[in-house]
Amino acid sequence: MTDTVTVFGLNNCDTCRAARKWLDGRGIAYRFHDFASESIDAATVEAWLGEHGAETLINRRSRTWREIPEAERDISDPSAAAVLVLANPKLVKRPVIDLGGRSLVGFGADARAEIEAALA
Image (cartoon, helix red, strand yellow):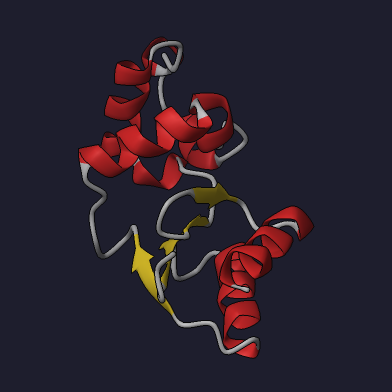
């Protein structure tokens, strides 16, 4: 287990802000990786897709998804999904929380419990 958690998301995302506030409140060290100011590398995206799958990782309810032409929305194959995410990082459901050996997508009660268990 790593000493530092990495939170991937957007600075202006309410769920990312809630995750950061929750981590701060518990004194959990983390690094925030903002998709808007820092890019995501292909290896990271491919690892997330391998761990969670495109259905979990890609936010198909987002405005970004709706703005992509339907013909370009192929997420049936991991390579196509990776290309789509790399071109449109805002498609990633947020936050993605890297715990050093695994990652979590989203920040619900289950994610909070997993973070606490992993860092206990």
